[in-house]
Length: 98
Image (cartoon, rainbow, N blue to C red; front, top):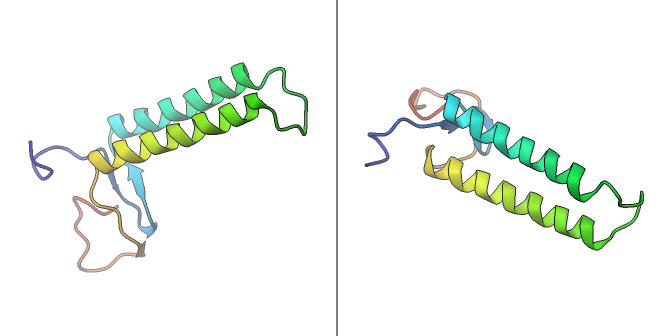
C-alpha cells in the first residue's frame, strides 16, 4: 500500500517540527504511550528514594527513550515526512499539514 493511498494517522504540526494526531488511531497510539510511561513510572520508581539516581531510574529513562523512539517511528510510518513549519502557507497540503 502506498503512502498516498492509506489514511494518515498524523499530520505535520503547524508550528515547529513533528506531528499531531488527527485520527482515532493516532490519538490511541499517543494515549497508549503516555499510559505505558505512567504505569512504568509507578511500577519501577515506587521504592526509589527521592533525589537519587539508581539502576531503577536508569532503566526507567531507557524505557522512556525507547517508547518515544517507537512513537516517533509509528508517526513517521503513518504520517507525512516531518519538516519545520511556522504558520500556514499557500503551498500547504491539507492532507498532510494541520
